[in-house]
Length: 287
Image 1 (cartoon, helix red, strand yellow):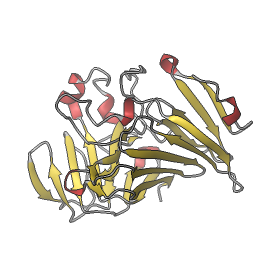
Image 2 (cartoon, helix red, strand yellow; image 1 turned 135 degrees about the vertical axis):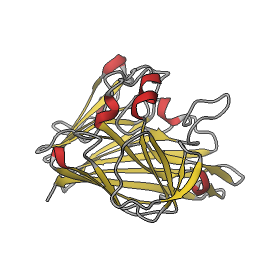
Image 3 (tube, one colour; image 1 turned 60 degrees about the horizontal axis):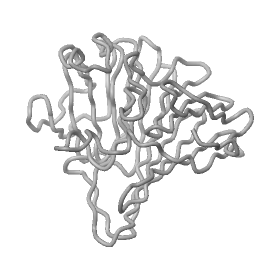
Image 4 (spheres, helix red, strand yellow; image 1 turned 135 degrees about the horizontal axis):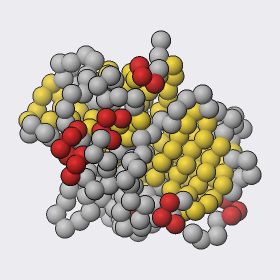
């Protein structure tokens, strides 16, 4: 890791070395702690002082410079899913992002700004603000001379007590692409419960989504702007067994609810235009 000690803030931001020798940043606020790897600008940990960790991290995750981290909040850009001859989910999650600034804000929050190097005809910045809530802002500017089309997603893995017990609200009556069944469906369940492999791209929705996790006695709220897609994913039994960086039984305590712009909601920008995907994650005790 290059010398970035001038970006440390005593008592708030510490630069250190994490798993696999990758650069890691520790963040402390009066309400919470967080950990972010420069590899992928990947938030791997956020925890309020009174709660268990918000994010699931696989015990099998490979912390290596050429591999994505499994869990936390991977950044998906500039495409979502597989692409022939190119890395799945794009270049962002395996790149070493530059840490540009760190700021201790007057209200006690801490913000960190990252930039994706070698992003071609784009300027891509990521602002992480740690407080009682966690706010993530992915800004993409078209710096080229022609219109450009791309996809974005914050592929968030939430730690849950038991997949059979949680429920999801906020997506009733929304049309989604069911990637398991290979068809379009309109969501009829309210709330949604998970009882098998789920890989759904909900389209044309900016709604707040809430995960109710009675086992952890909390509700997790995913509020967003600059996003028209919500992805819900759990690999279930057979797919978990096929994933080398994911434990066979880990599907039982994780749930991905992702915010972005994918498939029919992909983004097109003219030269000089910018788009910002903003997600605020909050949690509190279930009532």
